[in-house]
Length: 304
Image (tube, rainbow, N blue to C red; front, side):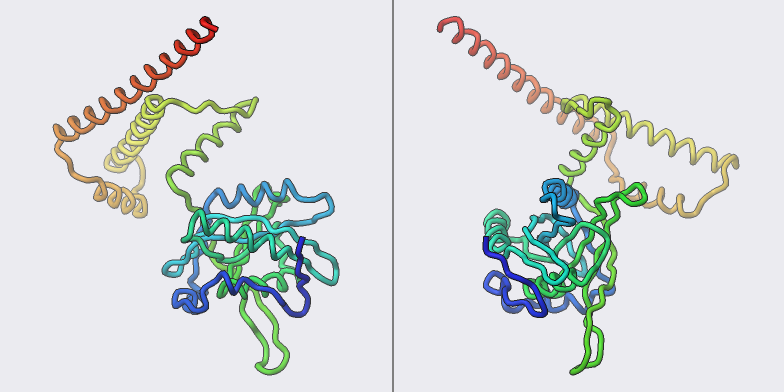
């Protein structure tokens, strides 16, 4: 395994894999104070998985963050762990492994680029400075994400930083890590998966059965109906003087109502019935196909 030792200077980089110049990355540092780091749930799961699979003598794990940068927002969509060894004096990182993994990810999703790196734990040590210096050669102003896998305070703390050089030019200089805002974002399929996983914590066996499409529609419809009843009850209580009015809640409800498209009730009912018929047809065909496959297996078993 080819490892590069990170000491007072960094000798290896991904310059052959990264573009030489990029206007987007050039403006990265200028917008650092207003930078927002949005992280997808799959990134957290990957970090936790790499931490659980670490070597017994490893105190923490590190890895590369992949994503996109757009208009002052760094969206981290993927990551992978990078093998490394740490001692009191030096850090050894497997550069060949990191390069191969990055090339494989580029083949799957060419839009993802290196946006930073992660480490488990909440400390930003001297070793973190050396590793961050290395990643600074892969991306301009990379993000450093720390994840508290020890669950201090009963939750998994997450912080993100960017580095800034401080000191006197031409003399003693140092590196200061400046915190940036961290948010969790997700695609619709990720959100659905998270909702299914959350149901497992209420089950003693920690198992969850995926519901059918019809049951999911019924559950979502019941939930929407319950929420509408609560909102209607709150508005009636405010109008009758039973509950004091709240300006923030009123503005939120106003924005919510104005965002709802105005559709004729007859057209809405027609559209709903049409979609429901399509869904029922798909369910019917899938059940019919499943039944035919089962009958085919039984007939073949009898003939054999």
